[in-house]
Amino acid sequence: MVTLIKTSLFTLCFFLVACAAPSKAPESLYEEIGGQATIEAITNNFIKEVSFNETIYRYFEKSNIKRFREKFNEHLCVSTGGPCTYTGDTMLKVHQGQKINETDFNTTVDLLVSAMAKAGLTYPQQNRVLKVLAPMRDDMLYK
Image (cartoon, rainbow, N blue to C red; front, side, top):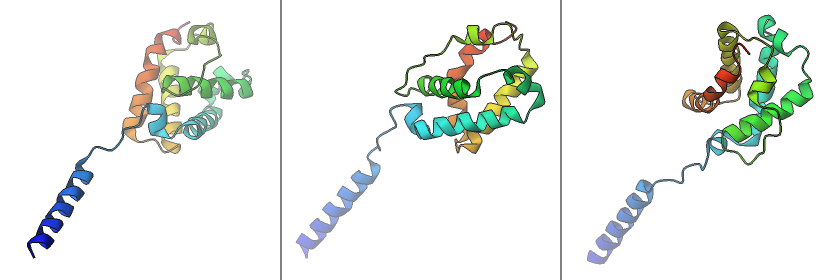
């Protein structure tokens, strides 16, 4: 009987330690949100969101959508800590001459948030993606 109690107690302790042990955290935001498949879903959703917004679409109407998709995928991948290489132009060069104002910039961010939500990102994940993209804001406005 004592052996059975000791065995049960040992099993219970082992189970509790195993449950309390921290699980392996994702190595990057890229992995946390689902990797390349999610990056591509966000990009595709964003392109759809932009295409239905008359105000923002005018900034994209002369863009090569195939190239935009490729570079936006690369950009999101790199920005979230993924294993990609960004081969596009700088944000300053891409946005120069467009004279993007605050209202249109904020609307575009809203479209990106919608695209991320449709790709299944939680609010905290969306905020983390926005946080890594936010430093590029000044390279996009009024240039």
